[in-house]
Amino acid sequence: MAAQKQLPRFVEFGKKIIGIGRNFSEHAVELGNAVPTEPVVFLKPSTAYITWPNPIKMPDGASEIHHEVELGLVIGTDGRNIPESAALSHIGGYVLALDMTDRILQMKLKSTGLPWALAKGFDTSCPVSDFIVKDKIPDPQEVDLWLKVNGKMRQEGNTKNMIFSIAFLVSWLSRHFTLERGDVILTGTPSGVGPVKVGDVIECGLGTVAKMSFPVVEGN
Ligand SMILES: O=C(O)/C=C/C(=O)CC(=O)C(=O)O
Ligand SMILES: [Mg+2]
Image 1: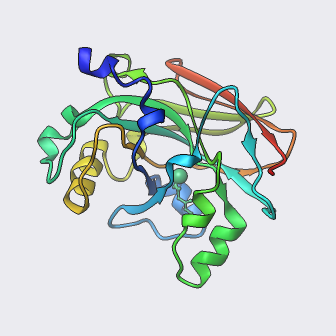
Image 2: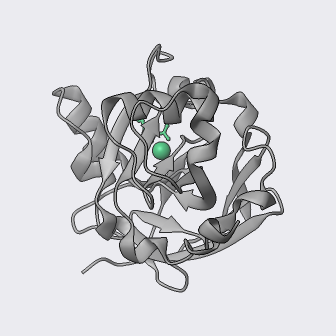
């Protein structure tokens, strides 16, 4: 466990933020997409990270940003071509994460077949909790996800309903690029995503293991 305990400052040396999209079928369908047969992958820059008490800043010109609550995997040990059987041993711990998304911009980009980077990567688009040691989540495939806006429940799901399992995702991603200690993999959001506006407060959690809260403010 000593190696995992060196990770709490991973945000400062965090490397890639790897997003998995459409990993819950009800969410894929709510946005009018087919259920994927292979993982859908995007990257966010590390400048997207924020931690409490910093606010989520509405990007300039954005008309609709959406909340997406997700389980984040923190890679503890570098790996390339990781077999599925060894995948969980490369996870050093977890974070509760928000994959904030400029949905209107994403829809525009999608309609012309362009990548989602600008819609997913704005500053403050990846609020994360404190690092969660691995022991606190004995089965990452059995974790409740929930999210409220201004006290009203918007998203409720469980990681058991993922289309692609966590072990599969770590293994599959590592066949495409090296996973490095400090990388965070956002594993996808359950249904119920929706817009937030300036003045709203987002509260979310991983069952009772982790909870966080972020206000939404004007950008700059
Ligand atoms: O395909 C879309 O319209 C949108 C997909 C996402 O934003 C995917 C995710 O980030 C997710 O499922 O968590
Ligand atoms: Mg997402």
